[in-house]
Structure formats: structure tokens, C-alpha cells
Image (cartoon, rainbow, N blue to C red; front, top):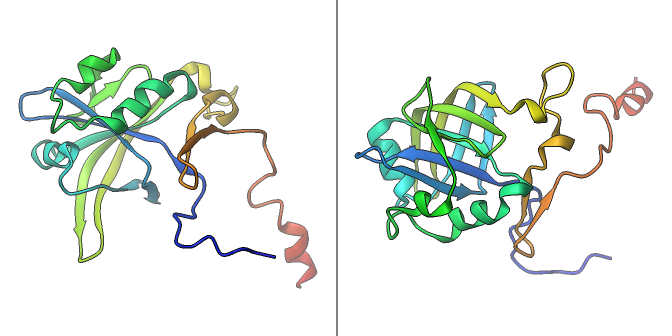
Length: 192
């Protein structure tokens, strides 16, 4: 029997996304964003607070990067969610991580995170209840160490962080449970 646990953010897993931008002076800023998702074949949407330093930056540069945080950099990823770029302008420098300029967009690529999407601002969605940043993905870069023999990202090598909104914990990807667009085939055949 189910027990009523009240209002809760009951979606799991949530990705731990590192959003990188430059400010008007070319200073790197990175924030931890759990509320983001692919929303089309070449689009990503991030739900951010309008007052974030990242939002001010991308309004100027019209670009950002989105990296997948990993277990090896949990301390830095969490730090990027704790400290505001509005209050600590040298937040990225304090992290000890390294950045290089994207060749495709005016945004930094954080070298330590294994997979990064280079995005151009497509649209800011602003309604009474939603503030979203939509980016067009111009390119994706991945460390060779997380690729399989076919050149695809192997999530078992990635050790990507997932955020648990129930208890504010981080997890990583575990074992493969099944094959998408295959596990349900027996049920689809029985309904014919």
C-alpha cells in the first residue's frame, strides 16, 4: 500500500549538469543545474532561476556549454551548486578546474568533465510559471575514455552523477537493466 508523503519533487533520476558561460569580461562561470532535459533532436532546455549569473552571462554571449558531471568531480560539481557567481565572481578559479574556449560557441569547455554539449541560445521561454533556456546543440565532445568500440558514449564508463531530489543525494549509473525499444516488444506482439 502506498503512503502519502506529501508534496515532493518526485522525479528520479535528475541529471547533474554543469552549465558553463563567460561573463562580459570573459571570466568563466559554471553552475550546477539539475533541472534540464533534451527537448528535441538538437535542443536542450534548462530551467534556471532568472536571477542566476549564468542567465545574465548567456543573455550577453548567446551561448553556453552543458557538461555531464561525474563521480571523479563530485566535490567541484556540488561546489558549483552551493556557491553563486553573483556573490563569488572567481568561483570557477577557486574550483581548481580548467577551461578552454569552445571552437563552436562563445562559451567555456570544462576540461575535467567527460562529456560536453556546445550550445547556442535559441530562445528564452518566459511564462507566469516557467523560465527556461533553450539551446541549440552545435556539437558534443567526449573523452575517449568514456567511449565504446563504436565511438558511442558508454554510460557505464561515464560515472555520470544523478541527483536524488527525495533525499538530496548523488548517485551514479548502475548496471544495464534492458534494451530500449526492445524490452516491451513481447507485450506489443500480444496485443496484435
